[in-house]
Every structure is written in C-alpha cells, then in structure tokens.
Length: 429
Image: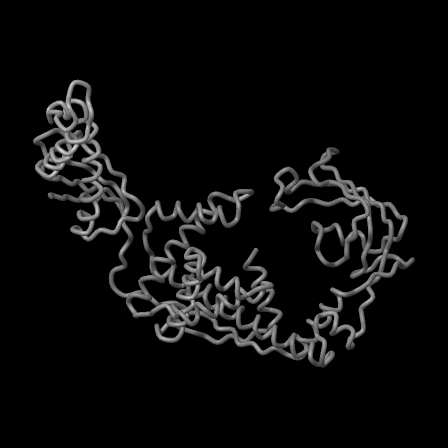
C-alpha cells in the first residue's frame, strides 16, 4: 500500500492511497467463486453456474462491495502509518476501479492541532480574598423576609419598594407592538423589572390615577421592532401597596424547613449555604481567568469541523430560538481551543482524571433531586452525561494545577461577597 500526503492549507490534508490490484482482484475472485456454489440461475444446475456467468451478472456489484470494504480496512491503516489524527470522518473519493489496476482513493480531512513546545503561562490572575461578614448574612435574611412578605394597600402615593398594580398600553409612532399591554399587572418599584424609566415615572402615583409615560427603549432591547425607539405608555393605577415583612422568629425559620433550633439554626444554615456559594464563585472566577489567559497566551488553530460540531451541540443545549450565529460560532471556537489546550496541559503534566471527584460532583448534582441515588445510577449508566461531568472535573484539576504549579502570576485581591455575586451576574449577561 502506497500513501502520499498533501498539506492543502492550515489543518487540511489530502491523502492519496494506492492499494495493489492483487488485493482487490483476489477478493473479488474469491467471492465470485463462492457465489457460484449458491446462486441459482435458469438453465444451470445448483452449484454448477460457471464463474464467468456469475461475473457477467454480479461482477460490477461485487467489485463495488469489495472496493468499499478495502477502503474501510485500509483507511485506518494509512492514517496510522502516517501518524495522522483526523478531526471528524474523512471524505473519501475512490477513483474508478478496474481489474488488474491498483485501487486508488483520495481522503480529505482536517487534523487535530498539535501544540509544539511548552505551554505559555505568562499571564496573571486575581484570586478573590473574601470573608462572609455578619452583615452579609443579615442581608440574606432580609432578602428571605422579602420573599415571604405580604402586601397591604395604602392610600398614600407610591414610593420605592411599594407594589403598584396597573393597566398599561404602549405605542411606538402611534402603533401597537408585541407585548405592548397588560391588565392588573403588579410591579414592585425599584426592582428594575420593567424597561428603564418605567418604574421611575410611577413614583408618587396614587390609586385611581391615570398617567402617560414617555420612554425610549434601550438600543440593545431584545425586540428589534422597538429597540432604540421612543414610546408612549398609557397607565391606569388600580392600587398602591406597601410591603409587610414577617418577624424573624421560629415561625419564620419553620417556613424555610428548619424544624429545630429556630432562627439560630436558620442563620447557621444560611451561612453554610453562603460559604458553599462563595467557594463556587471563587472557583468559577479563577477558572474564567485561567482559561482567558491560556487562550490569549497560546494561539491555536482548530479544525472547522470540530467548531461546527460544537455549534450544533450548543444549539441543542440552548435551542435555536434567538441565537446569534456569529456569537455562537465564537463561543464554539473558544470551547474547542480550550479543549485542545486543556488536553495538552493534562498530557504534559500527567494530570489524571480523579474518579473520586467525579463521584463527588455527580452526587452534588443528584442531591437536588427527590431520589438522588437513582440519579447517581443514571449518570453512571449514561456515558454521554458522565463524560460531561468528567470533562468538568479534569478542567478543574487543570485549573488548580495552573494556579498552584505553573508559575502563573497569582495576585490576591480583597473583595466582598455581594461584589463577587454581582460580578458573577454581570458576567452571565
């Protein structure tokens, strides 16, 4: 078998394979002889059909089958012989095959990139230094009180944190638009649940009042129909209500599932949950910085076929509705590049997947379900789902190695729990 490789640009390769004629012709001859023993044709006794007759009737079909089999069996051998790792299935185009002539076919494909030399760790990351303060815990308690709040109607004008119940109908250039009206809709002022300027203009309104709001939609508003345009909203106020917070007592604690220990036990549970959340936030920020640094410091070309596959996976995860194709392509390319770099770091530094950490993460995911044991079993019985967890774990292990052993510049940075939470929200869009 003769193999030649042509670099057609970047990661693209064209491989020409030539298989000796004897290998194909002998297999065809063997099959035809075998068929002569079993094929039934009019005018011939069973097992007595001449090979030439079989060849005339079935030769073309048999040749096609043998050629397909030989290509499949020699393709992997040729790739191994040349030390090539295709990214995806090669596109194979066989030349016309004739008896007595070598079988030739051309396989085109992209190869996985190979990072040569050492990984560049010449970047810095900021490690958050955070302590959960008593005030942070008290603020969380206040947020929980707001979740359990009731509303009492008042006769005074509306203020920030009040709930107003309104009818509204909006127009742009005098025309209605999608989602332009609602009836008896409750809005808590100051929560930014409406477009900028809407809630602010409801400060000081009273029950029974009617008012016109002039508002310009943000340029980045999701609906292109109204984005950046001036609008007018007619509003009718049905009621104004003030928030009534529950007392911080044993009844309040029981409302959140704390049956023993009262408020102190609830506070301890909140603190524990916040510490767990903080650990995740720090880990997430470090991972984001390390990955960004690796990408900027280690340019790598990746196969378009892998990026296309990643795009399809993202579309399946998030659905096709409203996705920006360019942004999706950038995310997919980034993920593929990171996969190459992370894999190379793990290989160069003998970082092995920790099965205990995989189990721990699976159990953490399962803990939020009604029957966690069944969820754990399901993960370990579903290789695709388990592979996702394994990828997340090896990424964490690589990030930890980079931070602790690579020599990357790690700078401690004091911050607060609320600031870290807000930063995480902003990064998620």
